[in-house]
Image (cartoon, rainbow, N blue to C red):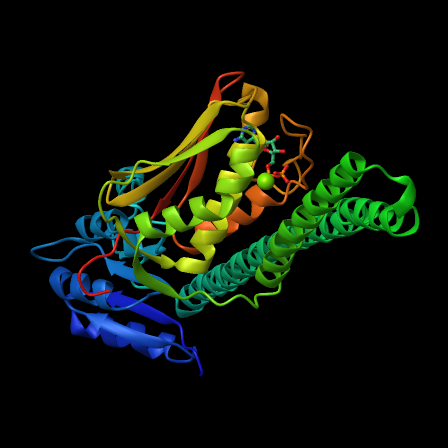
Length: 394
Ligand SMILES: Nc1ncnc2c1ncn2[C@@H]1O[C@H](COP(=O)(O)OP(=O)(O)O)[C@@H](O)[C@H]1O
Ligand SMILES: [Mg+2]
């Protein structure tokens, strides 16, 4: 689009306006004329001028007042103003003009060449100003775009780091934790097969138990590993449904009762009535299995573990509370994070992988909840997670 600069000319005498127009029309500009202060004000509010040429003596509003208005308006405060007057003979008028915001003066009757050359200077300045503004806007846009790119770069870098940690964890589990139970299973079953006649019954029974424990541990590890890897590759489906939490808790207790009983630990459900939630049941089952297994692992003999719920802030809080070894304050902050969630042996030297709580956190968050722990070292821990309640309609 062809852009033309605009000049405002204001004079109460049409002959003067005409004369100005005659001179200025050799320039490739748009001229906007006004014969009084009011019309000039309206023009200023409606146009974007490169220059204003104002007559000083006008009835109603003189050039000085008009110039003051121009300076006071946000839109025109930097608009160059040239005053036209017959009387600039004394310094007082010139001073008054500058105070009102003039940038130049021309005496009437004017010399057309001087007028033209002055106007041309201001038009040039205006073009340069526009060019600068344009470049500034482009620069700002570029800076904005660059910041956006930097931000997304940072984000993908973070994702990559997270993926790398996940991969490291995966391999470390495959390399160490999965090997151990198989070493036990293979070693002792081989002994039992080849040395059968030399092994007394009580020793054999002990070996059977070791094999059985190792298989269970390998199985639970594999279950976690499988679910976790499926969740990492996005292959796990999230299917929330309404269900009764009390029921799922009692099923989880049934599954782990035998393991707890071996350590003479009691699992107690505090649910006395239905607690209806809206969540993915498989994920919640995995969370409970992990939290209760941990509670058993880190509890001493002859103790008990309670599982219950509280309603808070519109969410259902489920807790698993033990009276076991507890956690040191400095270790609490390391839980649930793939880079710092470390496995420590249980009260009977049970081993682990440090995968359980990571999985719990992931599944709790998929369901729109949070997971955290309250623990006192050497007294016990309470793991709590929140799930959305069933609301009418779901
Ligand atoms: N109930 C608990 N009491 C004390 N420490 C716990 C409890 N649950 C988890 N922890 C600590 O958090 C660690 C990580 O738990 P988790 O991710 O389930 O891995 P794992 O059970 O394979 O060790 C445990 O090894 C233990 O140090
Ligand atoms: Mg665990």
